[in-house]
Length: 181
Length: 452
Image 1 (cartoon, chains in turn orange, yellow):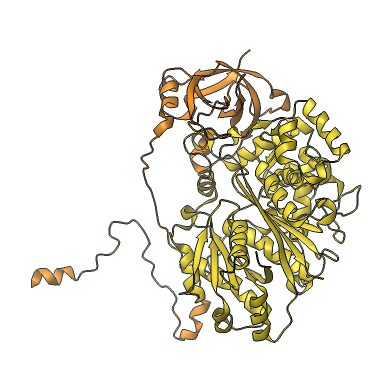
Image 2 (image 1 turned 135 degrees about the vertical axis):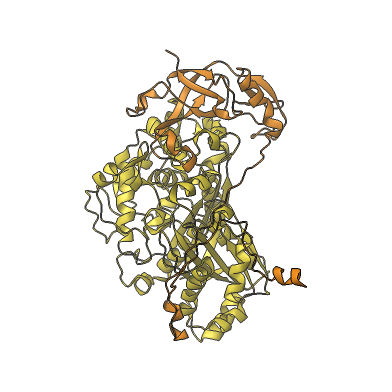
């Protein structure tokens, strides 16, 4: 009986770091005035680890860890995708792996002075669309080795070489680009 | 398909944050405008409504799954049929089209489309992270996922291909912020000049803070009806309602990853993507020269989805010269650059001419003073409401907001709703609304027509 009484204790939200105990919340005697009340705003933290599988795209990341840049090629129409995809965007047929050339060119770029929260500390950083000889589409990567504070349209077409991060993080940024010359 | 009329619409006040209401409260606020417009009480209209379609973009922003049904029950529309649609930035435009289909198919006579977004749950840069999750999380997001960065790369290529300038883009910012000055629903009415845009903090080169829309809390709603539905409403209200109908809808798609966009040839462009207005010998000669210089379509500088949506809508509507046959456009200007790119997709000018078109004055309103020297007269005002840049962009509501403002233009009731007539497009008969997702992944174009 005594144990059951203990259970009556309010045990709501103990596992959540949410809300704050507020004192003196104004409360009118006249209930008609409740609609004039200022909104109560609370903080609700939310954090999560996602378990993400690269699935059929995994060989690309294994390639980067071994200093090999893999793209795919459609087995039917022959389109070459440097951002690999095992199903062709043009005709829907299966694609097979192939190694991309080591040299590339800059197709377009921007300098990010702000970014999503996770990237704010890296600003200013350069996002670049990379083109390869013999490929039909592009690859999104990071460009280094140019001054982010002096962007120029003349950069477009620039020959680039690729570098691989020594300690692989199994991210597309395991490869990055810099001017070839 | 049955004829579908758009009879009334409502927009909540858009703001950076609306802590005074939850999202359901914002939906109710937009719905109240429909009730006021029709001079009806909720029980009376609720009884007549057969179904609803609801839209919101992000479960991350909302942090409330199944939020659509909460709007439905808050309005008192349970237990009628309803479903939620989602398609990134085009969520509202898709909602409009799905509501159209509910009525056109004969499934409903009176359908309510309502959409909302509550983005102030998180800080701006976390919000940018949520939005960037609408890019491939294996290949795009980890590289520096940031939508303004993606759009900047697209326009940098546009600049390289066509000589488009940041000053031309700034014209769009000046226009839309100034238009919004006369729109009491807008979030960011501003009287600014070209240099103000260029001097604003750089976000992603060459886009500054004034080239980019902001995040918002807000809701919008539209009522779509069949001929029978219209009769029921007219009987209930005892009023003759202004007749605006959906003349055609169109939709297109493209690859999620910007990097995956194809680079087609002249022949492929003409086979798959060219509009009627681009099939004249003069247009073909222009494009021949462009492709000979190395132009590829759509690449990253053009939105094929927007083109295909326009093409489908125009073909269904029988529009062959959009710049002449459409009186105004409310388009998805999340960025000044994307407004310029969209002029081209929608055939208001040829590909490559969007920059000069932006600065020409053709997309400006005739009765607004912009403080700019514009060489040409108003031809097809674009974003007379102020667009997303200045009205705000509560994603799931934006495409419906465009529908509401377009409806009021075609009803010639801007003065009634805005308390001034500045933004009324004179004699507006045909309007287009354009809603756009991702880096151009889903795009909807709907043509609204005032009945003579």
